[in-house]
Length: 77
Image 1 (cartoon, rainbow, N blue to C red):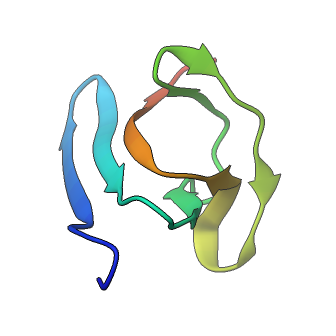
Image 2 (cartoon, one colour):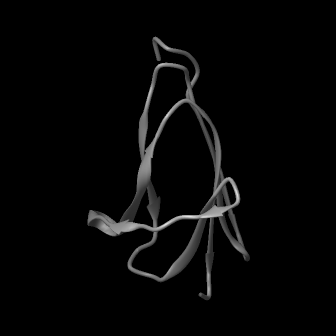
């Protein structure tokens, strides 16, 4: 982007889904995660977050400013 590098790096395994996001300076990102209607525990940088159900199987977890984020989803609440 004009403001810098945007990073999106994710992986999925038996324990869940993890996603590294980097949002550059002077930018904001609306972050959605794939939940597909399932109840999952979601953490951003180690802190539990609440979700808002979205369309097409994704849930909104907030608008985030510049920085690095680790989003983790695990099933079996």
